[in-house]
Length: 350
Image (cartoon, helix red, strand yellow):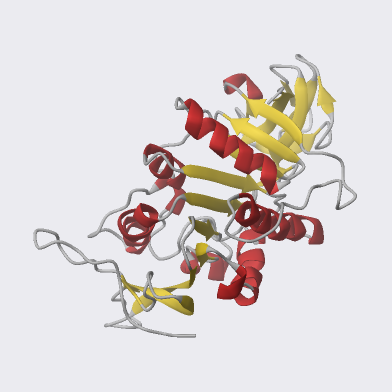
C-alpha cells in the first residue's frame, strides 16, 4: 500500500483547493488516507477535520464511489463500507473503487444528523463552497475533485434517530430515459427488500441532484433507522455494495440474488407525489396505528397525536392519502408540526 500526498490538479485560472488529500486518485494499488479540511478552532489553531478515504485502482474499468456517514446518526453505511475498504484488494477489481465510509466525521462522532461544528446538514449543502464552513468545504471538494472522475455513486443512508424504514434502495425520477434505465438496473441489482423510485419532499442541496445533473448513475438507500443498526440492515448494505460493484463489472461475478440468500424477491415500488407522505400539524405524543410493511387504504388512520398537557382532549388522527404500503414512519415518541409521520409506497411494474 502507498500513502502519498496528491490531489486532482487545477488550472492556472483556478484557485487551489483548500481541502487536500493524502491519496493519489490515479496511482495503481490500494491507498488508505484522508481528506484534510482546514478548521481553525479554539482547541486547535492550525487544526483540520480528517475525512477517511480508501482508493483502489486496478486496470481499466468504471469508477465507483461508495459513501456513508453523510448524516452522523445513520450507521449501516459507515460499518459496511469500513469493512469493504479493509477487505477489497486491487487484484479483485477492474477499474476504480473510492470508499468514503464517514463523509461527515464530526456528526458521526456525536451521532447527530447535522455537523456539531457548523450546524449544517451535509445533504442539503451541495455543491458546497470552497470558502464555506467545514461541511460546505467537504461538499465542494467532493463535487469538484471526486464526482468529476467517477461514473457511479452509491450513497448509503438510513432513517437515523427520527425515522424508520422498510429497507430500500432508491433513485429519483429522471427525464433522461437512458440514465433512468441504467440507474434502475443498478438499484435492482443492489438487492434490498424494496427497489424504490421516489419523489422526495425536498431535494435542494442534495448530493443526489449534483450527481444526476452530471448524467451519472446515482442510487441511495434508507436502511432501517431509529438511530442504530441491525444485523439485517448491515448485511443488506454489505451485500448491496458488492452487488453494485459486480453489476458494473468492477468486481467479477454476478450480483447475489435475494433468492440465493433465501429471501423474498425485491419489490418494485414508488412514491410518485406528495400524497405518499403524512405530515404532523401539532406537537404531542406520537402513536403509530399500523406497522411498517402493512397495507393501507386511502382514508385509513395511520397515526394519532395525543396532547401532553390535557387529558380531556381527543387525539388528532392522521389518515392515509392513498392506497399502498407503509414503508417509512416517524420514530420518536414525540412529534412536532412538520414531522413526517408516514411514507406510503405503491407497487410499480418496473
